[in-house]
Length: 231
Image (spheres, helix red, strand yellow):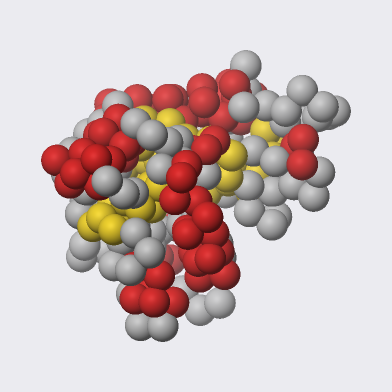
């Protein structure tokens, strides 16, 4: 993969063989985020889990104390009073059955998170082939299948993020923007790692967290001391 001049220059600031402490890694991630836009700082956590086994599937959500720096558009599937409640709570889009053809046939996907009341999952299930691959399918573990739509919307808007294993058993999560202060990024990072540690499957044998890497959108990865992160 060909790298640009900026990437090559910033990569010189990072010792690829070193394991950095959290605060040092956060500081470095901000320094190597030199793109012309406000880069997202992401965490990539390689686990020892085997996602092919249901009991080792990690999936959940956590509210980052300082949010992600991104405006999140929420779509709520509900009916009756719950539809009114979702609108009052600040959902960007609300509806029911009538949204199915709009998403399926017109390819409408102008939303970042989907919330549904349990009685609407029969309807939402028909969108599995569209929403599933994009990670947009509501899930009880992530708190996006719930009757308490107000709480769900408030948490998402406040900076709730979802984490899950990908096919390589790695978790990829944004923890903020390069414009955040070091303290904000460190707080968000620690909150995420605490949640991941709590989500450790009881059936897992061997090392749980194999590596933790911090990286801005366009910059090099910075390896974090994973042993300090795994309690």
